[in-house]
Each structure stands twice: as structure tokens, then as C-alpha cells.
Image 1: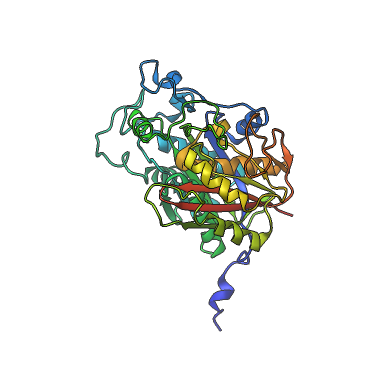
Image 2: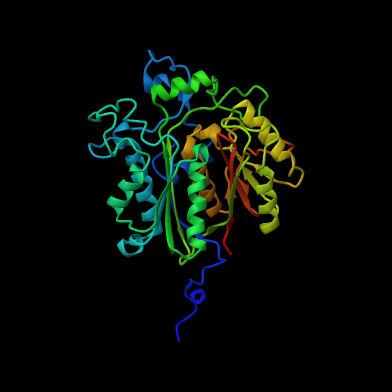
Length: 390
């Protein structure tokens, strides 16, 4: 007699996927350990963009954060974004201990907002130029293609481009694939290199760019976000044990404006309420907290609905800058690295809390679910919940 279809599903159904590998790349360093030590020491990678673009740039005084050395992202075949994605993918795979057999059938999900703008819309120093419409260096999916080819990942392959929420949404899609039993392993990668003059020009004209550093996202004088380069990777497994797991993910849309964020926080509270019902009150929250006034207003309202229960806030953009589509996954990777030590990352000294929640300047003990929020333009909201495994 043939087994029932349900009996063919792996035993992991209903089991939260384990985090078994991490990778990180930003102005704070080339690996997860560099980020862990830099943030523990209160180091910020934010500096005036004159250090990257020169004093003649109209953005010379604008604060930003970039990856060095630039040669790390330079290649004749792959775009700078693909090189950053490959760098973190290799780190996560190495830390997971995955070999060819484990990689071949794994899922690969890449999140990005600006794709291959760097090296396409603007020249990349030391790299041969590409024609405006030359494939594959001008498409969002090239980082996923590069990882698939270079690492031999042949399973489900997806690219998520939901703006600043792309990295966290990619993680949620990976959880869905693992929970459904379609794959046993998944590699999630996010990358954005937004420090391209044409992009900076457009950010500036929108009034979104910050003019002071470091950012203090919940200050009444907050004036915009700090653009930054970054990439991250997270390896997940339903058959291997890690010290942390993703226990919940959901996203939704406010459906009110193509660009703006509802002042009342929109439908984010529904995500939070659902997560609390399924796993309890958060011990800590890492909000999106970009530094724009509209984001600050919305998140103060969101956080006010769960204030007064001992939840602490952990803001990472004052240290990293806003890495756009990579931000949700990069900040998740940092949270997860601290959670390996049963800790939560310290805030940059002087960072303000919101809605009565504390933003501690020292590392705190992790004692429950950790919520990570991300938002994309147009009212796209996402929430991931991480917990330490027994």
C-alpha cells in the first residue's frame, strides 16, 4: 500500500527552522564576528560621504556608511552587488558546515531593493563598464544567479524586491519553504549598495536623507535616514540544530498610499498581535527605525500599543546606517549572533527609546522572543520572531 501524502512530509512540519549559519558585510566589517565586536564596543561605521565620493560631490557632507576595500566588490564577471552577495553567502555556508550534497537541493532566496544599480547606473572604480542594457549585470536576479552558479545551489530559487523589507521578506519565504517540507535547507541572502550618485540625488530631492550623524531615529529632531551599503546571509535548516530559530513570520500591506507610511502605524499592529498570540510578549524589539520623521511617528504609535511590559528596544541603524533592502536581514543576522550568547545588542550611547520603552546602552540578557520589524514604501510591513532553542 502506498503511504499517504502526509506521511511523506518531513517530521519538521510545525517545527521552527534552526539558524545554522550567518554572514554579514558592511562598514563594520567583513564577517559576523566583526559586527558582533564592533557593536559590542559601540563602534559606528557612519562617516561623511566625502570619504567615498570626494569633496566635490554634492553629497560630501551627507553621512553614510560603505564597505572597504572597494576591491572586495570588484570583479570582471559579476556586479558589485553580486560580489557582496557571494561574500556573505560563502560565510553563512561555511559556518553552517554545508558541503556540496547539502547545498545542491537547498532553496536560495535573495532580497534586494536596488539590485545592480552600483556598477550599472554609475561606474565602479577598477571595473570594466557594462552597456546600459547588458545582461546580466542590469537585472535584480543576478546576485541569485551568481550564488547559484558559484555555490552549486540548484533548488528553489527566488528573488524578492519589496523595497526596504526585501531581506526580511526573503527570510519569511525561506521559512515557508521549510515549514511546508519542500526543502530541508535554505540560504537567504540580502544585498544593497545604494551609494550611487544618481540614487543619492533622488533620495536627497525627496527630503529623505539625513543631514546629521549618528542617527537617533526616535528623537523629535530626527531628519532622515543615513544611506549605507550592506549584505547579509542566513542559513536555515529543518534537519540540523542551531542555537536560535525563526519561530514566526508574517507580512501585510496597509493599502493606503504608494509611498507613504500611515501615521497611525497602519496594519503593523495586526502582525504584532498575531505574533504575541502564537508565542507570547516580546522580550525585545528591533524596529525598522530609519530616522525619517514619518517612520518615527508611525513606529511610536506601533510601539505604544505594547509598551509597559518590560520590552527593550535595540536600534541598529545608528551603528550601521540604513542598508535599504539588506537592512532587515543584516539586522536579523546581528541579533541572532548576539542571541547565540544569550544576549541582545547594546544601543549606541544617546539613542532614545520610544513609547516608554528602554533603549539600553549595554548588552542585555535575552530572555524571550525577539521581534524584528521591517517596512517598505507603499505600506508594506513584515515581522520575524526569533527565539533561542532549548
